[in-house]
Length: 367
Picture 1 (cartoon, helix red, strand yellow):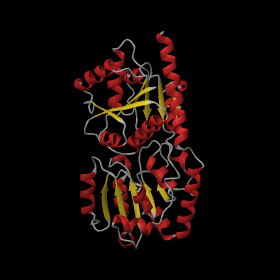
Picture 2: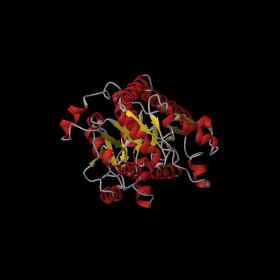
Picture 3: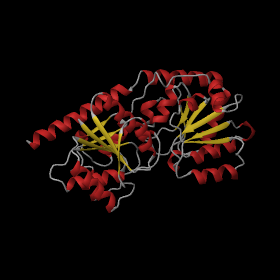
Picture 4: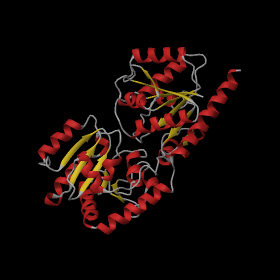
């Protein structure tokens, strides 16, 4: 099959990592896969490094140059299926396809539980314009059906699968030494795009509330909230405790350096960083939003805290940092949960089957 992925976002996180994982996996299975994205997007360079074709288009915003460029691409190149991943590229692809006589089927993947505006335009976008909607968790699928009234027969949940053999436990002291970190003391961390919804500001407030008991904090990732978070670190007097590591193409050594992984997110799909942290065998403190309850059980394979509650987050961190046995048990259970769960091959099988069924149906109609 000839598959086109589109991504308008110029950020870097689990969404982009999943796109690359799907693309490289289906290329290995003999399919032709390309990614259309802005030339300066991090996913473009990462895709080229993996030998994946990149089609540079001005699609970062919903503007006419992006629409014209997308329509020209779809006239010039024939694809069997298109998989869109963000709102902007979904709109540009949908409008382009609507103007073509033989447009390929459009699959819209929803990676997050962020609300969808209840407009007539979005009813069209998620209805007639798309052949299928894919969510990365069952909770998001149920939300689209129950809260928005979308047709459940056209929505599939395909969780993000990771390689649990790769994301395995390691020696924290060895990882810290390799990264130039202090070997002794407690280290907690978060791997997430620096957006307000991820809750970095809550984690910093919690760190400040812990006073002299505060551990060191690693913040892996980048994004629009970085200037505000840097200012918050200085205002709270946390500069000696907090390290901004920026985007990392390989987060494994950073995860292995941690005692506790923290994700105080407010809105979520099924966060890839959390699945990776669990696979590494980390004690995880997070919130029961989006698809997170599908990944872990509170008190068994993670610790859940109320979203947007600094006091609850602080109490949970104090508890797990003070109890070595609890951290070890939660980490073991988290690892076991991921090993027994949905892996990368299962994800590829599901996406490949979906793409093939849509492509075959489209080809049959064209005859």
